[in-house]
Amino acid sequence: MSSHKIAVIGGDGIGPEVVEAGVKVLEALTGAEPGLAFDFKRFDWGSDYYRGNGRMMPRDGLDQLKAFDAIYFGSVGDPDLRDDITLWGLRLAICQGFDQYANVRPTRLLPGLTGPLRPELGRQIDWVIVRENSEGEYAGAGGRVHRGLPIEVGLDVAIFTRTGIERIARFACDLASSRTRKLLTVVTKSNAQRHGMVLWDDVVREVICDYPGLTVDWMLVDAMTQRMVNKPDSIDTVLATNLHADILSDLAAALGGSLGIGATSNIDPSRRHPSMFEPIHGSAFDIAGKGIANPIGSFWTASLMLDHLGEVAAAHRLMVAIEAVTDRAEFLSPDLGGTASTAAVTAAVIGALGFNEPPKNRRRAV
Ligand code: NAD
Ligand code: MN
Image (cartoon, rainbow, N blue to C red; front, side):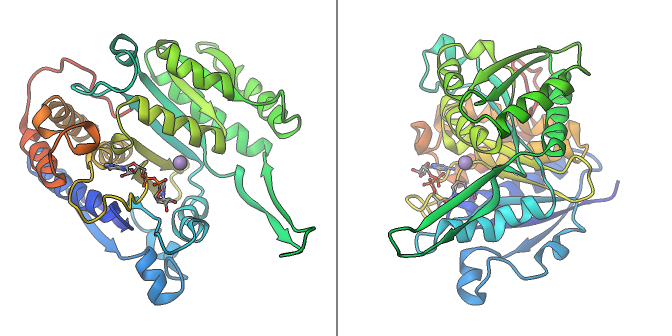
């Protein structure tokens, strides 16, 4: 089998720390999975690159990335630069430039972790949130005029298109259909936003008609937050807009134990462009450089990437190793209440890659 070409963009803060840990794990995985091979290429793009070049990535950055099979990303964000510059200059430039319109965020309470919910409730978390990743509230349309005057205006226009809604609804329905419970919750706010969100409801409803095997329910986004906390077992696959899913998925990560374990994929389902895989956390200035960032989110992300690349056995093996490690208190990092360093968690996961016991829990990446 030919090797997978992976573009590695560590970015800022703890991004490079957790992504390099992930590369080590992926390299170790090639020793355990016959035929698995990677060709990694690193890109030093991000806030330091910006200080040297006045841009977050080169002008032809997307051209440089387009020949890769996948992008393995850390995070962007710098205490001395505006967040809208760093985010739009790199991460959103890639997501939008490559039309990675499906953002997928699985959440489950991994073995050994407790999370903030009562134990019997926490154990019932097994969700995947599908976030529309190309338009909606983060379409980037808007403007700011009359700067500095009392009449100054700032506008962000949420854009909902029939094409954009239809394709993400189809993606979510396909994903929900592939999961055991075949249960989809559609999140909306069409009571208050009566144009774009009503179109969202109408188009999603049309798409759902093509999936008679699915059970579908609808939630207003505010009510969805309390359902996630109070009745986690009533949720399986969730479809939501760019902004709504952004917020709900941080709540999901916290309910799953820590922001440090959440994983995300930004997918171009047409496969015309490479998809991008990243932990959901940011650059975490408060712990950067200390060697204590939790790399589990980055490893789970790597498992999602393997699934996307068709390396299902390797994705499974990596999830088995991750779950074997989270189940051992001595390998928990400080955000999970332990004392293990990034390096110690990484070594433990590498050590567990050969672990072949029959699964006692689910090992799916999604
Ligand atoms: P953050 O995720 O960086 O940090 C929030 C808190 O969680 C911090 O206390 C941090 O120490 C902790 N944390 C996060 N990841 C952790 C890990 N792997 N291990 C242990 N603890 C971890 O969010 P923030 O503070 O809101 O943002 C910091 C910067 O990151 C900002 O510039 C923001 O714009 C950026 N950001 C980028 C992305 C991205 O690149 N996708 C996502 C979110 C935030
Ligand atoms: Mn977010």
